Length: 528
Image 1 (cartoon, helix red, strand yellow):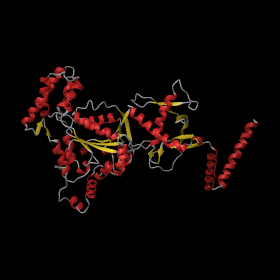
Image 2: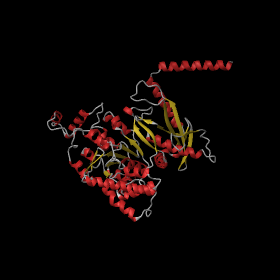
Image 3: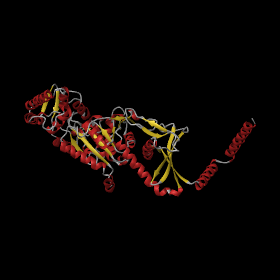
C-alpha cells in the first residue's frame, strides 16, 4: 500500500513540475532545450540513425517502397527453420487478391538485422498514430509509417550508406521483375484519392498475350522487341543525351487488329505495370498532371481510342465562325487551348496543350522508364502535334491479317506447326488472305468455333476468306458495304501522311462523334 501511495505522490509531483515548466518556459526555449538534448544524446550514442518515411511531402517515398520490398525478401530468408534472428520475433504475412505469392514483412515496430559488406545494419519498422490535423488538402492515413536505419559509428556509415541504398534499389528492382503479379491500374472516378493519397485503383494483371502468340508479321514484332529492349537497357544513353527516359508508341489501324493485345504483350515482355488512363474521368490539366505524378517507374501509360475519348481541339471551325475570328489574334498554341476549352462538355476542360505537356513537357520528366501508348482506329483524326517524334516516337500500323500472322493464329488455336498443312491448303490461304483483308479478331472467331475439328476449321476459314475477297472485288476494292456497315479501307502510308500534313482533323461536323461511330463495330458488324 505504501508503494502505491509513493508512486501516486511521485506522479503528482511530476505532473506539477511539467505543467510549471510549460507555463514558465516559452515554446522557443523548450524547443531549443530538446534540440540540445538530442545533440548530447547523438554525441554519446554509438550509432547513426536514418529515417525513411512512407510519404515525402505529397508523394510516396520510392525508397520506402524499395526498402519494404528488399526487407520482405530478407524476412522470408530468416523465416526458414534453419535460420533465426534474435532481433526479429514476429513477421507479417500478406497475400494480395488473386495473387499466388505470399509476401513476408516486418510487423509494426519490429526489428531486423541485415549484413552488407560485413557491416551489421539494424532496421526497425516504426508505426505511430497520426496526430489530428486541422487542415489537409487530401485524406491522410491514420498511421505514420517509416523505417529507421541504424548503423554503428565505428563502421563509418557515410562510406557505406550510398552503396547500401543503391544495393537496396537494385535488389528491389530485381524482385519486381521476377514477380509475376503485375498490376493494371485505372484512375478513380472523378479523381478521388484513397487514404494513402493514390488516385489509381489496381487489379492483378493476368493477360496471357505475348509476342509469341501475337498475330503480327514476325519481322515487325522483332523490330518492336528490339526497340523495347534498347529502351529498358538505355538508362545511361538517355542520361548522356539529356533526354527523359520515356518513349511513345502510337498503335493505329482498323478495329480488331490486336492493339490491346499488343499492349499486353509489351507489358509481359518488359514486366511493367499498366496504367489505363480514362480521360473522360479527368476534369482538367491539373488533375492530369497529378495522375502522372502518381504513376510508378517501369510502367506503361495507355490511352485507348484517343480520338473517341474527348474533343481535345477543334481546328476545323469554319473560317467565318465567331470562334475562329476571335482566335485569329492569338498564337497557334493559345488558339488551340482556347478552342478546346470552349468546346468541352460535362465540366471536362482538358486541352491539347495539357495532353502534349503530359506526354512531352516538363511534367513528363517526373519519373523514369515509362512508356506512353496511344491507340486509335483513325489516325487522320489526330492532331499532327500529337504525332511527332518525342511524343509518339514509334508509329505501329496494326494491319489486317497477313499470311505470316495467319500461320501464327493456326498454331495458337489449332496447334498446327510447320509442315502439318499441305502445300495446296497453304497456297490457297496465302492466295486469298491479303485480298480478303480480314482482321485477326474475325479469323480467330472462325477458328474458335471450329477448334474441335481442325480440318473443318481450316475449310471454314478458307471459305470465309474467299467470300470476303469476292465482296471486296465486287465493291472495287475500296468502299465496302456489309449489312449496313460502311468501312473505308485506307493504306497505312497514305493515311499517316495525310494525318501529318493536314492542319485539320478531317471532314464532318464532329470528328470525335464520327470517329466513335465508325469504331464501334468491327468488319462483321460486331461490337468493337
